[in-house]
Every structure is written in structure tokens, then in C-alpha cells.
Image 1 (tube, helix red, strand yellow):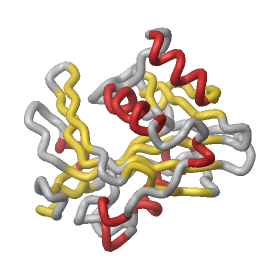
Image 2 (cartoon, rainbow, N blue to C red; image 1 turned 90 degrees about the vertical axis):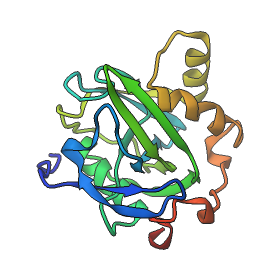
Image 3 (cartoon, helix red, strand yellow; image 1 turned 180 degrees about the vertical axis):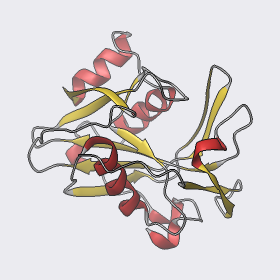
Image 4 (tube, rainbow, N blue to C red; image 1 turned 60 degrees about the vertical axis):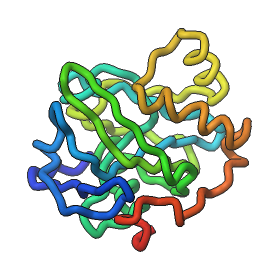
Length: 201
């Protein structure tokens, strides 16, 4: 079962250079004027090269009910990025990852829905599972999951047959530029990670 969600989670606030400015309560940080903070976005592939897509729970404060990449999250203060990714995979999906690798270390985005803003320095991470597992999603976070061939994801989003979150829509062409086959994607330059998390990478 996913671990019980903590009520005291903190996110790391950062300046434009990615340097830490302190922390804020995760439960209250998102609003109409959300400060820039650290996040991450993860794409999980199975042994066949299919991507795990998830539909965000309808009750989430931002982009509820929207299909997106496998999962997203926020590194806790002093938490290594890979540790944060593995923690979130377990909490949100009951998922154990065999590989975690940063592929887009400098990604940043800002998006708004219903007056709530997402504003993140958000490294993009590739993860793998050795065998496609049985998932145990937290219903407060995820309402549906689907394994989809990578090339079908790209084709469906490009043709408008599938709508995804704005950050996922921005990330897909950047990931495609890394190579046609996700198995061939090279690790990103760790020096391009936000300064607040770079020493922990």
C-alpha cells in the first residue's frame, strides 16, 4: 500500500539561479502567485519500452483529471533527487524503480489552471522497472494508469487524440530530441541541475 501522506511536507524555494531561499509548506505553497520552487517530473518505462501514463486525481488542486507523465513530485529539503523520485514512486503508485536517471536537468515551466499556478525548476527523470508491476496507486493522487507504447504517446499527443498536462506537453518534444528510442537517451549534465539540489545528485 502507498505510505500515508505526510502533513508536514516542505518544498524548497529557489531563486532564478536555482539557489535555495528556504522552504515552504507543500500544502499551501501553490496559489495565484506560487513562488519558484524545486520539483521533478518522472517518465517510467517498462521492459517492453512502454511508458506509464497516469491521470491525476480529480481532487488535486492543480490539473485534476488531466493525463500526464508517470508522476511528479518535490524533493524535500536536503533530499537527493533520486531518493525523492523513488520515495514518490512508492508513495503515489506503490512502485519500485530499478533505474533512475536525469535526462533533462534544466527543465523549467510555469502553468496555471483555475487561478492556481505551478512554477517549478523541474528536472526530468527517466526511470525503469525490470518487469511491469502491479500498481497500487494512491487514489488521492492518481485516478487511472495506462502503459502506452512511447511512439503511440507521441503520435496521439501530436495529433490531438490525447491531451496531457502542460508540463508533459512541453517535455515531450525535448525528450524526442534526445533520440527516437528512450533506451538510447544519454544522462543529462548534472552541472545543469538547480544549484540547490546539485550537491545531492
